[in-house]
Length: 501
Figure (cartoon, one colour):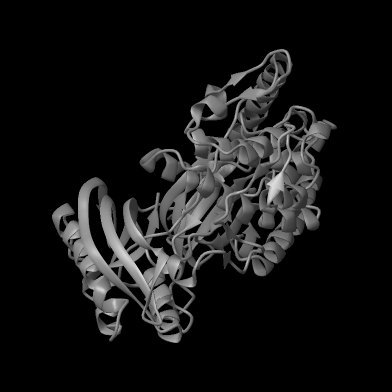
């Protein structure tokens, strides 16, 4: 009989992904009071050599310890809850489940991002990558699919480290006396030296640069042109209103030669945060005057008015990109490497027993309350109600009860917390007045279980008064495209998160 629980603890809900090194599942921890959700990464490593198996086990334990340290000390890396192995040659990592969408999925559903969004994401991720590199760790597989925009705080979270796969594959290769580890990473986002099995810190920056280019262009690296004489990727013609500063920084990050790239994540981060920069040009370009700066992985600093980050008006968000391959020689190398990988994986899979996991077909995590479905019309009405309610929430008497009835999660916290929007308005003797508040059109709508997403175009007229004086710089009229995440909670649908695109 197949076990219903993995390791007598984790109830598998559904499969998330599958690849050459194993599978990933969403599960529930039955031994925690909260019944929290988690991610199971199952790595299939089969060998008949007991010495090799012991080496793989030791490497796995060592890499798991590194993942535990990273997740405990950086909030933009998933926490490691547990790890274990079985006699069938399968290794398991139990990690924190990050609720949100990958950058790849966001671009797929909403289109390419602006350079200001991408720059904010880069600044946030470079802080994380700088931290990882300070621990002498190279991620090896940075790409849009491995970066999740966390729903709770809209910060990018870096997942699926290639270090564990690389360490284990090196041990397996040693069984065949192969001196170089298998190619770990994703073709198109990998630098030449990484494809050759010799990644360096700048290899992660190369992948990050191509990820940003994907966010800006909506094109994967393989769809971009390449100068066969220099190996440089041609991409800027697919962008709109790209600043020379960001273009120069990304061009430097994806140079074919390691010596031509940024040497460290800190160097690239400082270039993005500087007021001016000179990259591949004789002209000094000024940076954008209004910029959200994420200086470290725990704190966000805004150069705009404190109230702006709580309202859709000046809200801004995130983005990223991707890239193309190198020269004909690189393509040949990648094809050859993939051929060798195919042979090795074939031999592994022939030996590999069938997975003992029983996978129910639940499409989404279950909810403990009876969910009342929401239609597109009802979702639109909720957003319009929210727009109309702003005049009562962000002006005396600052109707907190109304805010609680309409919002939850991130939106509720940014309004009601001790350093939230209402607190700021009260402390500064300020309030907003609104004119036109209307939904112009619905661009996208989807619903699944207790979650729903609606993308709308809205027109908003607003004025900020501080000490009874009109703040002209914080007043005006805007037409925005906003994505609202809705959640069914406490018996009703509420707005849980929102972002302007």
